[in-house]
Image (cartoon, rainbow, N blue to C red; front, side, top):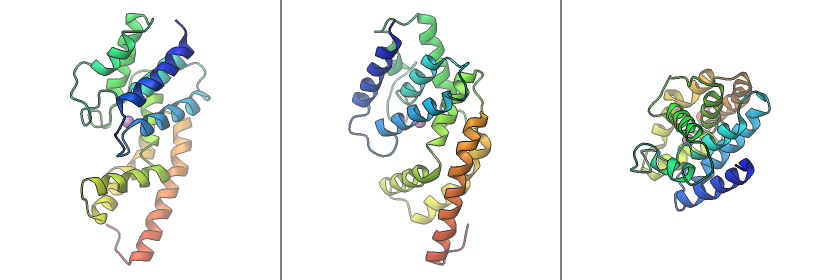
Length: 195
Ligand code: NI
């Protein structure tokens, strides 16, 4: 099993899978989560990098908001065609299912690898990219700006305290402060009251 080749193929696979989806939850999001996971891995050399990177790349491949699949069918369609032990493929799917935000609010993956992938995903919801994604999504579903602003208080500002790893906590702190600055400026410019 050539791990580098499999990772490269996984990148191609998810780019094809998400082709045409540009609401902040597509291939671009997956690639940022992959990059975040890579950055976090530098602090955790004891973690299994192959599993972390594959799970990061495939973490939204069966997201219910985007795909009508069951039992990680899209992830397994990729993993099953590669020279990957069945046990490893199962572990990767278990990690993916533990990471999903909508299903697992407040739940913590059991393994270090799962924790890293969950942190990598959550980091992409905050900071400058979190702001951009919130308004892109809000525009897509026709939300009033004030509803998107409320989303910061309901979810985004809570995420820094929900990071599993210390490395992610440090990255999250910076992104959190940036969101707070954005909100301050937003209230100043608009004269709106904070929710
Ligand atoms: Ni995600």
